[in-house]
Structures are given as structure tokens and as C-alpha cells.
Amino acid sequence: MIEELRAAARGVLALVIGDRKAPDFFDFSQRGLVGSFIAFLAVTGINAALPALLNLGGGASIFRAVMMIAILFTFQIAFSAIVLRQLKRLDGLIPYLVADNWATFFVTLISTGLALVGFGGDMTLIVIGILVIVIEINIARLIVTLAPLQIAMFLVAQLVGVSVGLILVGIAFPLSPAELEAIAVSTPPA
Image 1 (tube, rainbow, N blue to C red):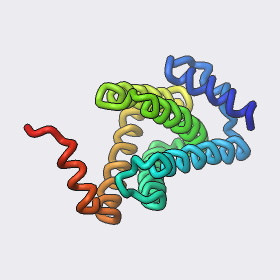
Image 2 (cartoon, rainbow, N blue to C red):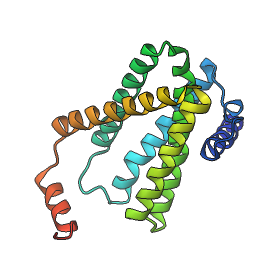
Image 3 (cartoon, helix red, strand yellow):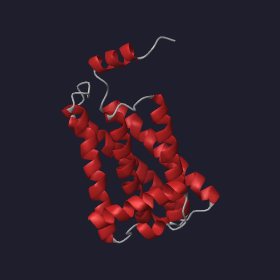
Image 4 (cartoon, rainbow, N blue to C red):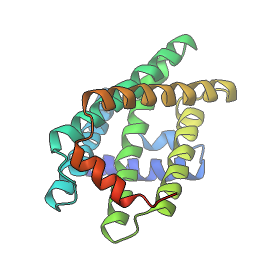
């Protein structure tokens, strides 16, 4: 697992810089898929539990955080699979999952680490957002090997899937009055 972790780290770095050798660092076998899901589940658990452990969660439960991540992930994958099926490229789903799971693992660790040392805020969010977009484009381009128009369709499908997931999360897990008040207090007046 440690060797797979190191190789995946090099693969994610290759995705960030757009290196065409990025696919060589990932294991697209069944074993590699399982390993990437273990990494994804580990970072999901850390991401869900850390705010509660550090008393930063504003009352949000670990169950709620995990369910929100699960719903968003499910919709992102489902909509990605729909587009890949339409493009007759369903063979790219497992490579996509492996690379995306590992990218999520490392980006989440980096963003959590930055937040813990005090580098939270809008600028960090923008930089992480740009990093995620670059990685997603390069996964579609280098891992799934889609053409430019197909990449656009693939990314739009993911965006739509996450948006539908967010709507469902908002319905299934509405914010409590205390959370709404905390948001209102922390938001500067216009």
C-alpha cells in the first residue's frame, strides 16, 4: 500500500503539471481500484471527524458529513458514467475513479493541512479550486483520453451531478437554526 501511495502521489503531481506519463503511476487493476477507494474512505473519515475532534464543526455530526460526501460522490460518479456511456468510453470509468480518488486524497490532505496551520480563507479556497479544475481536466485528458469537446461534456456532467447532489443534500440535511445563525454572524454585511 505504501508503494501504491507513493506512485499515486507522483501520478497526482504529474496530473497537476499535465505530464503525459501520469497514467503510468496509477494501478488501474481491480487491486488499484480498491486501494484508491481505501485512500478515499480514509481521507473522507479524517475530513469528517477532524472538525468534530477539534471542536470546529459548529454542531455538525460526523454521520452528516460522511453522508453529504457520499451523496455528492455518488452523483458525480453517476453523471460521469452516463456521459462516458454516451461517448462509448465506459472503459475509462475505472481509470477515472482510480485517478480521481487518489487526487481527492492528496488535495484533501493538503487543504486540511493548510487549514490547520491557519491558511484558510478565500484565497486558499480559490487556489484549491483552480488546482481541482486543472486536475479534473488532466484526468479527462490524460487518464480517460477524451477529446476536447468530450472533456467539456465530461466536466459539465460532473458539475451537474454535484449540483444535483447539493440540492439533495440541502433537502436531506438542512442547516439547523444554530448553523444558520453562525453563517449570518460570520457573513459581512453588504
